[in-house]
Image 1 (tube, helix red, strand yellow):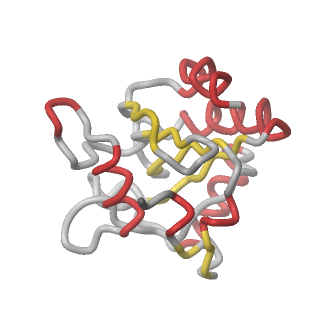
Image 2: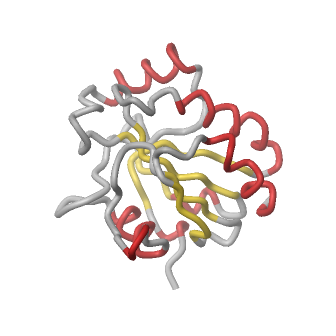
Length: 159
C-alpha cells in the first residue's frame, strides 16, 4: 500500500526531498499560490505550523501555477515572497502541477486517496488541503475556502 513516505519531490531549492523524512508526523499538504484571493491563508497555515510543530505536525506548501497563472514566479521569488510577506517557515516544494498530464505523482496519490465532492479527483483551485496521519495516509481533504484555523481540531485528533 502506498503512503506519503513513498514519494520524492523537489524542495523549493530544487533538491530531492524524500517525503519518508516526514514519517511519524501529521502533515497538511497544500497547493499554494502567491497571487490568489486565498494567499492570505499563508498566515493561518504558518500559525497552525507554529502551534503544533513541536507535537509532530508539519505543513508542506506546494506552489502551483495551474490556476489563473497565480504562481508565475521562480522558486527563489516564491520563497522570498513567502518569507518576506507572510513569515513562512514551513517547507515548500518546488513548483509542481496538481492536475493533468504532468501532475506530480504525490498529487495523483493524494487525490485518489481522498477524492473530492462527487468523487472528483482533480484539485479545483489553489489552497486545497490534504491532511495526512502519522502513518502517511490521507484522512481528510479540505476545499480552498476552508480557513486553516478551522482544521485545528482535526489536526489535534491526529497528534
